Amino acid sequence: MTVPLLRMAGICKRFPGVIALDNVTLEVAGGEIVALAGENGAGKSTLMKILGGVYQPDAGSITIDGRDVAIHSVSDAIDLGIGFIHQELNVFDNLDVAENVFLGREPLWGAPFRLVDRQKIRSQTDVLLRRVGLSVPADTPLRKLSLAQRQMVEITKALSLNARLLIMDEPTSSLTLTETDRLIEVTKELRAQGVSIIYISHRLAEIEQLADRTVVLRDGRNAGILSRAEINHDAIVSLMVGRDLQHFYVPPETAGQTELVQVRNLRTKRYPAQPASFTVRKGEILGFAGLVGAGRSELAQTMFGVDRAVGGDIVLDNQPLKISSARDAIKHGVYLIPEDRRNTGLILELSIRENITLPDLPRYVRAGLVSREAEQKTANEMCDKLNVKRPSVGTRAANLSGGNQQKVVLAKWLSLNPKLLIFDEPTRGIDVGAKAEIYQLMRSLANEGVAIMMISSDMEEILGESDRVAVMHEGAITGILERAQCTEEAIMRLAVAVPEAA
Image (tube, rainbow, N blue to C red; front, side):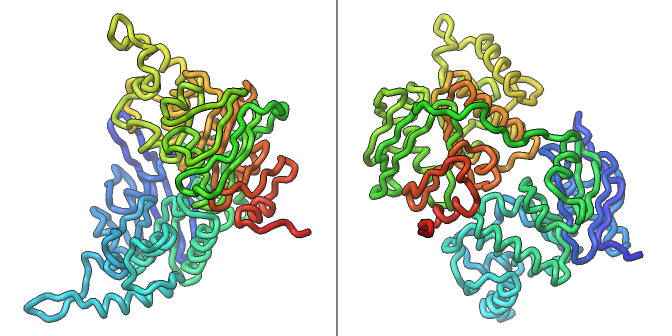
């Protein structure tokens, strides 16, 4: 029997009041891609931090090539050939590619002076860049690279350490479809070269495409292992959540027909020469598709008053709106759930209660003071309605999972009776169980008559959840498709501004 490259057996880890990992086992063979799946809080990150030397296990063993090893630090993991590609990139914009790859390990020459041998690091980096298929000179400043290219630099850095096992944590979460395809090809090429990979992603389509096996964790325990032939969306979801998610995407009960929002020739600061016009019907989810840089987020921010419009009109329920600030939008019932919930959707240091009530504090004033009791009542009602998992509404927003943070952003707006809700990447970085809940919430709001705009880079999400799809390219709306017309090909043709064949 072939000895696996990595075997983690009986791994246990406890934190105060929490059992993070309970007797978890994970094996990875040489030249194998193993997907690690599970909901937020399932234990994936803790297990990988143990493998990477950040945490020490309370029990269990780790073997490399059949030999017991102790990983007490990140440097121990590196010495064992373990590389970590983090979701948040650890690169420096003020350095060039080669300097990033060899940072802290620069070869030196001129013994008394200890000068960096730039020619050597650039030539070695060029070899590694060819290995990952990144066609840029090694002396290119990092600030000139796209996000996907920077991701490749992270992989190059790991390979420069002679990594035999790469841990890739949500590597495509911020990439376009084209960039994602390239990263997937590179991952397959690395496997062909004998590199083993642990691939963590909430995008199940990527797991189906890449993984040789899938290991699923649930509540800190092994929930099951799927072989290559067994890997499919429903099987992964069933193991992750312990139940079947029927109707993952929720179709409309009835198609909305009454136009609630009319946007006429709206021009944004990003694309001042491109007017955008569209309508949103009462009770519909209008999806917005397009490549990164198409202008979708800028359109949303302009409608919410974060940016001032260069020109155009917004009409809501037959009333012209003048939106010069977010305060104006909120006053008219227009709310934005932003793409970056941690930085622009929440104040992480504040509690759930404070985040939910912040947009309308005067409502909670009693005798000149903010009533903690009134805040508590609303916050608990909204958290119960949205199934926010929390010890209490006094819990800091920073301590919640991504899915629960998203629900808190939504809760603060739902408490104000929205007319138009704009979701910008509503499920980015959220596990599959929380995704299903967000979709149910969006559809129930639409069924109650709320108009919803949903900006998403997830093609499955756009196709599954939208009643109609507006497609943007460089600030312009290149087409609006009815649900029956929506296919990936039709959307992509519009996204790259390719007209339909006659």
